[in-house]
Amino acid sequence: MQIVWELDNLQALADYRLDVSGQPTVIDGPYGKAIEFDGVQDALFIGANPVAGWQALTVEVVFRPDAGGLPEQRFFHLGEVSGDRVLFETRLTEDNHWYLDTFISSGESNRPLLNESHLHPVGQWYHLAMTCDGREEVNYVNGVKEANGPIDFTPLTEGETSIAVRLNRVCWFKGAIGRIRYTDRVLSPDEFMR
Image (spheres, rainbow, N blue to C red):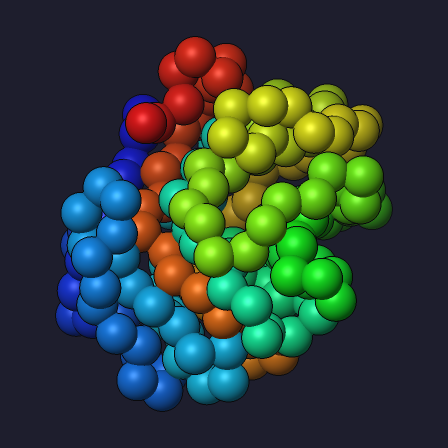
């Protein structure tokens, strides 16, 4: 199963109504429309967890991190506020680069993957992916594997989704997001969305 969320409006994603914080803006992105966030108060909240019950997953995001944001930004949060959850984060450097940080918390197991040795310039569009087969979390930038580590993953059973901030409204994201795709299995890089 695959679920695609096109971030092309401020009313709904697929069948889910959006709760909008601040004044995010619909812009033109590399693959159609995207939503731009100010890094201060702009975010989207969806009262659903589209991957609930999945034994394995791939989450993909097309995004553009911008300069001038917080040093640590949580731009995608799926699941519970502090319980079982999946996070995509950026870490900005003082010289306008960023690196990816993905995180899974599942029961007593958690796995952060900070890609400190893989720096990328801000202001450009990137494809990100995180896969989990139940035993290992792996993350990618533009189809290139950057980090992996063990995780004892059990399916998320509930929760919500936030885009451009954590569910508890801290660590705001400055930049734009165009598309999110969920797949109920581990994809190989040649299967990632283009």
